[in-house]
Length: 349
Image 1: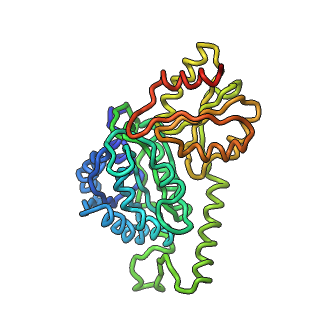
Image 2: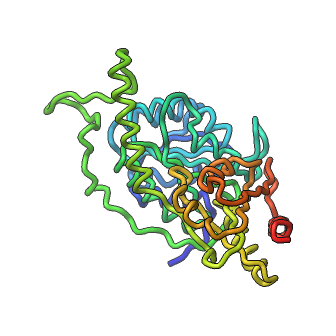
Image 3: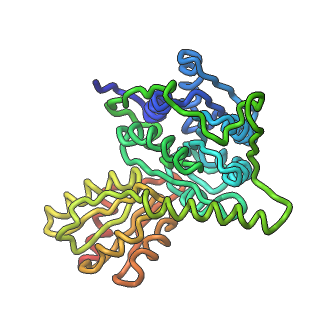
């Protein structure tokens, strides 16, 4: 049965149904409703909600809770995500699974509370220090956002690494009918063999992100890289929309991809063969598939609510096989279907 829900609330409820019972957060627009929802729901499912005094405190609480091997998460928006970066690097170094929700807003700096996609670099290239990666998922509807929550936790534990769900303020604040996922039975979750749960009846375990011996630390880093390689080989996700006969392919993600789908239909009515390629995993980015489909395409147009962050990955995937154009707005300004259609027409002329 579908329910009319706000994006942040649908994400929160889906996380609970996926087995999350530990949430730490600090309110920041446009995701404060997610924190508020968790404050109400966590006690109802015998979970723990704690509002911290800052985002720095939040990520360190998440670090400690993740060491127990439980499903833990937080949510924030762009400036708050920036404050979490040191802790994220520590958690990545300790190989801890956790889920982060970043409901992006305009920036840089304090910016505004309008939707944006300008945190792409931070999420996909690593906002903290060191050689680490996070899996980054980018849903484009509330239904997909709800569906992807369970997958996010599963991937985090499968690879013992962090997962970020990157959405913009529009997805966070809009309302749509959503069919919530089925409940997972948390009693069936097995305790990880690395979890810190007390060593009274077993040998002690250690979770750490450092070693003072550089050669031992390098071994840890090589282990991380081997994990990231497996993720890149097995967990790439994308959607193709009307690309089979397309002369122009638009690459977009999240809310922008949703807008572009409308534009594709409008352009085809005017005789312009356009398709959409939508990365769902922003990391690992679908370089290989993008490279495969551009062979017979005249133009690639990347459209973002930023000034060209995903554009760099698109160019890497295209690898010079065809022209790559760009159209973007930022600071909370959302490109309209008419603007994108006009950008397509300029290329098609």
